[in-house]
Image (cartoon, rainbow over all chains, first blue to last red; front, side, top):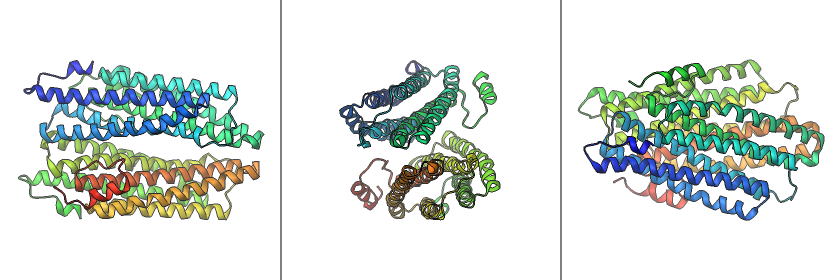
Length: 241
Length: 241
């Protein structure tokens, strides 16, 4: 647990502040994961009441963002952290941004259901395909957050690589949607709705990947955005200075 | 100019480092703006050579991100900035993230042209509508960056409000695309291509709005994400403590 790795500062209050930053981030992540899970359940079951609940719940995710952002800024201003502590605060700040976006994307999935007034529904096969992609994305996100919590760069790299499978799912669903529209113009509305949900899930995968990058930065001290897979592997294998 | 507001530290080298952070951010922004402008020119004129150039140019934008990120981290670690300096470094860090995404979106517009192998083209009217939206977004982005450079919270608020008009343009283009698909299934490919470009432009508007929020944070010391327009107005009118 990351929380066990924080400590030993001259000030117990400082330790507590760093711990709180991480604890609030994890609480925010738990909420965003619940929002995403509820949004998918709502969409799959055409549960408009649950979708409305997700839409309203996004405010709480946003409040977390502002709260954690200010808490981190306060630590930076008063404690002037260095080395691992500084990287921890910056990783939390960056991850908060990604989790807030995941909250937005959960809301977008809920709105894809709420905006539709035609009552036309995707087929069982289409829903099953989206559900499979959604489960994969949710699992990836959960693993990304655990890797962050455990400061585990190896797991973060493994999870980051899962994004490829999600991009493939997305491409496949988009291909099916396009064919379905081409075959039958009455399917355009439903196909666009499916595309919106698949796109949102694909973006959640990107944000989960970003969180993995922040974990590697936290553990290894290097910004690894835009590195090739080989370069990433080298960074993760290298001992921390 | 922001650059004139940096200075007066015990160390000339520290002043220079803060100035460099801003200068590199502005250089990165200039490049991202050029990428966006080239991407739109390429799409409107079906200029595949220019689109390929945009696709390749995104690497330079990404390199800027890593470079500025490391520069800011270095300032945080060695100089332990406080007050305005700290807010400046954090605002640069956050804005870099948005500008990198704008680079990605320019690439996405270029790829919307490159991926199409049908040779079907939008009508003159459709291209004109996209072009108008593109010009509006580019102007908003340019004004957002100027507001940041000048540390001008009032202008930042005015620019932030322009995002509404861009969202309206987006909704209108999407509505036209949908109608066009419904009327004629042979238009589905072209309509989706138009939707992709319009969506990318709408997202650029969101990132320009984020940069305005970072400017208000820089000037006023408050995280203004998720505030209502009235609350924003109050924050901007209030003198800085």
